[in-house]
Length: 426
Ligand code: RM4
Ligand code: MN
Ligand code: MN
Image: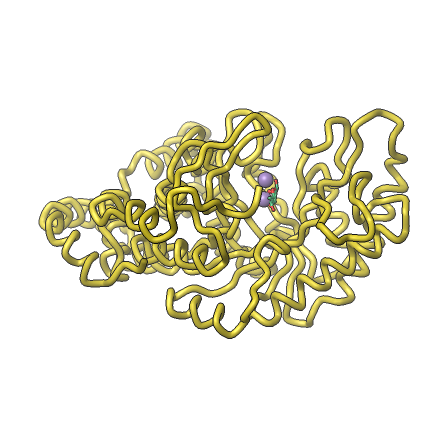
């Protein structure tokens, strides 16, 4: 199923008048404060976030999985799902593939389908955390860090194969997330594991095309219970530096221990020109549990404040690759992704409203109270009319969730694909 511009227009017409009043009021208020509203709207419209091919089905836990029905069971259908989200939000203009979950069969057909859905291919992700059916070696005791050279070589080769797949699709980056670590004290020699990982990453790096980037993701726990080889941003940063200029750290919001100051990590990495990729999600306890901004929206805003600062002041840092990395246990994945996109745009818009000049002055004067006032002034602004205006201008829906429901998207997908179609992935 595809959603046409006309369908969206019809749904928008019903609520357009109300939007106009709200938008004009906000635009006047911001204008009086010296905000260039048109520039903010353009920045919002330009901000595109990739959707991972593995987030379109219901997620689960080791205890169970509850389908939302009509899930996409092949890559074509996954691209269609992202196309639906993009047509409603105009914010999800890219898809990120996980290999081997989503290896294209017919590359030209897949590329054409993506173009028809107004999508490009973002980073390709390798998978050395699961054993594949005909694989010679097992990753049970690690992949790039394994004590066994043959296992490391297989894992390196897999990453190089993933790059080859990405090249055919027009991707320009490889994301490496390693599950490597140990389950019991004494199981691994930490130094050997890190040494092997560095050597393996350097081998992969050698196979990276000139105009590509390699993103190294970190995570403190899971699936191993005792130690993780790339446990934190410092380890990732160190490995990226060891590899070279095309290697970067990737920050996934769900990959931090409680109370970690993620905004400070973002700031440091951007200053050093090493923040390459970014995975959005929110969490209370663990990894990729919740909708972006659903638990800690103020933290998300503070993180965006640093991202906005870095994008303006750190030309040494490339424009980061944005992706949602979330799992949807009980919600319709498409609705959840739409909510996440809204939260991302909201935090971004609020960060764009921070009066950076006044903030700097207050910081130099050590006026702590004014510093906080300035951040909270921006945070407390209801920016949703700006988001709606940006969507309206780009041909998206004023209210994507309402439109999704009134167009009966899930019902059509169930009809098309059958109730029990299941998506590949985790
Ligand atoms: C990991 C990590 C990676 C993702 C896998 C599926 O926790 O966030 O980015 O590829 O999950
Ligand atoms: Mn991630
Ligand atoms: Mn994760």
